[in-house]
Structure formats: structure tokens, C-alpha cells
Image 1 (spheres, helix red, strand yellow):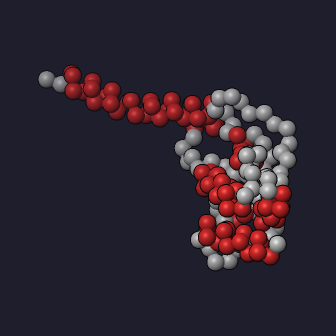
Image 2 (tube, rainbow, N blue to C red):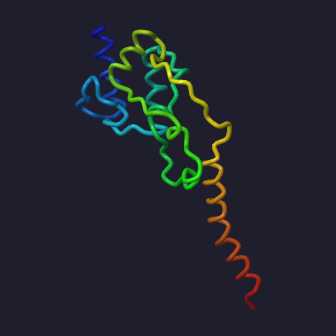
Image 3 (tube, helix red, strand yellow):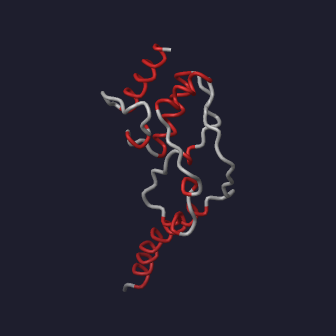
Length: 144
């Protein structure tokens, strides 16, 4: 058990490039500022390193997205805003290693089949890109 604790501490230090770990009960993602794709990479690497089946891990309970430009979220909540936040602590990861599977049983929840927040953001982005192009084409075709 002590070797697994040492290996877990080493993994976290290596992944986050830190020297001092947060306390055993701290929220690792918050205290180490691990968000979005980094959180997913952390969990996948953790599962591979320690032989833990992380297929039941649901990112949206533990972290937000890295997307900084998401105006679609003004109209439709992203997945992490539709559920209650659940912190991941050192103890959570220790339990996962002991069970060799993700230890958190999530509350019942339902997510929409389509990410409308992302679709709206994509549409806005396309419009913002198209406006200058259309303006350039109009200017080029109407100038003498």
C-alpha cells in the first residue's frame, strides 16, 4: 500500500510538474488547476499507470471545459453546468487503485444528445469569419 501511495504521489507530481502535493482531502483538479482536456488526460494516464478501469469516469462532474469562447453556453448549459460538481481527491484516486475501477457512483442524470452550446458557438464563429470575407469580396467586385 505504501508503494502505491508513493507511486500515486510521484504520478501527480510528475503530471503536474509540482514539488509539493495538496492535502489528502483537497480537490486535486481545483488546487492543481487541472481543467478540460488536461483533466481527461490526467485520468486516462492515471488509469493506464495504475491498471484502473476509468471507463465509468464522467468528466463533467469534475471539471469544466477549456473552451474560453462559448457564447452558446449563454443559451444552453454545457454538461458540467447540468450536474453537481464532485471533487476528486487523493483519497478518491487511492480508492480507484484499490478497487481497480473508478470508485464514484454518479447520481442519475441525462445529457442532451446534441451539444447545442457548441453548435451555436460554431455558427457564431462561422458568421464572424464570413463577414470580413464577404465584405472583401463585395469591395473587390464593386471597385472600379
